[in-house]
Length: 99
Figure 1 (cartoon, rainbow, N blue to C red):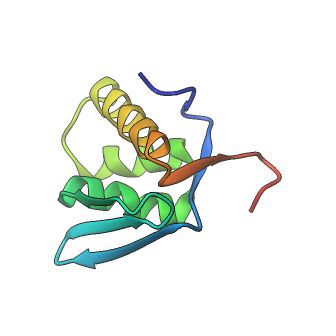
Figure 2 (cartoon, rainbow, N blue to C red):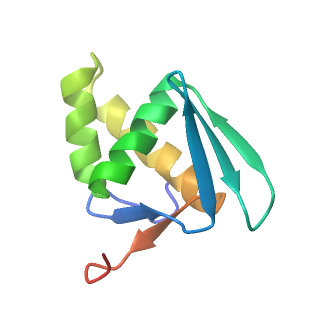
Figure 3 (cartoon, helix red, strand yellow):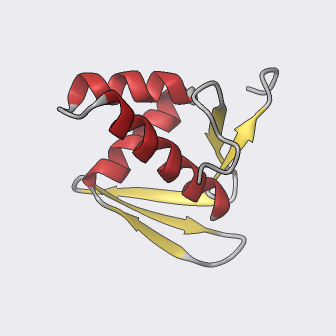
């Protein structure tokens, strides 16, 4: 399930999320819901790439260059993870005109 997020999607971290890198892992706080989330090193890397690039295809390409994983597996796992972040209100899909 990807929640309508595709490789052509652009996403951004919502303004209601605070996050902190803790030695390779990431802790996120959704200020709207009060829920904390913990990301392992792979999740933290994806979070960092989303912050830097916002373009899901670019994130995929960078991950494929960094990790030994098949294109299909990386795409499936990335889209699923990004959809989960969106479901939890941590990121949102941007329209092409959005910053």
